[in-house]
Structure formats: C-alpha cells, structure tokens
View 1 (cartoon, helix red, strand yellow):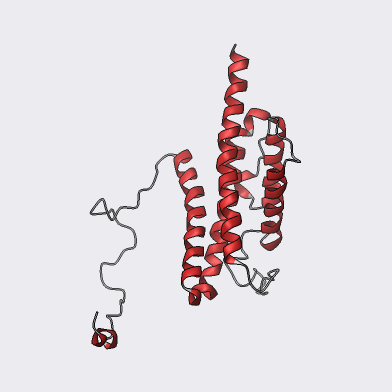
View 2 (tube, one colour):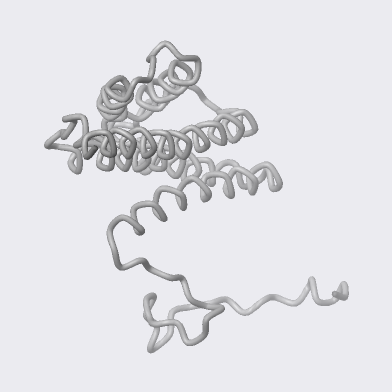
Length: 207
C-alpha cells in the first residue's frame, strides 16, 4: 500500500435497492450453516457464544481502542454461553434423575439453573464440595450478581429508564478469558461425564 492510498477516502457503504440481510449463500465459502434439528442447533449456539466471547476478548486485547464498545458483547456472549450450557445439561440429563424444571425456557436466572444442575450432579454421584464444582459455582454466582436477568450487557438502562448499575468500572479481560476457558472445559467435561453415568445406569436397569 502506498502512502497516497491512505489519503484516498474509501467508498462509504450506504443501503441500496435490493439489499436484504438474509439470503441463501451463492457459494460454499460464503455459507453460514444453520442446523435444522434442535439438539445440534443448541450445541452450536452454546459453543458459538463461548467462542464469540473468546474472539472478542482477543480483539480487545489486540486493539485496545475497541475495549469501550466491545466489552459489552463480549460479556453478553460469555454469559449467554453459560446460560445455554447449563440449560443443555439440565435438558439432557435432568429427566433421568427427576429434575425437570417447568420454567426452564422462560428463565435467565443463572443461580436457579445452577441449583438444578447441582441436583443432577448429586443424583449422579458427584460431590458438591469438589474443587471444580465449588469454583464454577462461585463463577456462576458472580455472573448472576452482575447480570441477574440477562440484560445488563445488552442495554444501558432498565425498563424504567434507570442506568443499570455494574459492580465495577472495568473488568480484567485476560483474567476473564482464562477463567471462561476453564468454564468451557468444565461444561464440556460435565456433558461427557453425565452421559457416561446415565448410559451406565440405563445399562444396569436393562440387565
């Protein structure tokens, strides 16, 4: 790139006739695939929001000027990944041990979701004083304290027009990214462990 190119203003993209945001992709390279079945889509959403949180964290760390605006979608992505992850585990393994909360699809309460998840773990033989469970429980509690209803990172004000209060004036991005990598591994590991326990119990019941 020449110095003169930097001085040349780039074309400013304005809406034009025929614009539609959603259309079928013309090439494989341009396609963003959308799963048709519920379980696959749920997993992709859960993993996608966790990866999006990490990608935004990397962007902020690489381009510090973006931290003022990108911190909110990053926090929302991480929180939503936790919420969808817990809901997935409850839906998949809760019915096997009698944990079937009726309002699961209508709640954004992370603490309530964690309580249901804890019941499933206990029924499957996990000790709730295990280091990993205690650590993730505290992480869930902090996310809940920051954003009880899933709106604090999406809007500046609540329904009454009052600015939503956040617990700190900043957040350590490197620490958040590291902690959430651990949470991601925990959720994936819990999925595998609960699946093995439930399958083993089903095998015993059939024998």
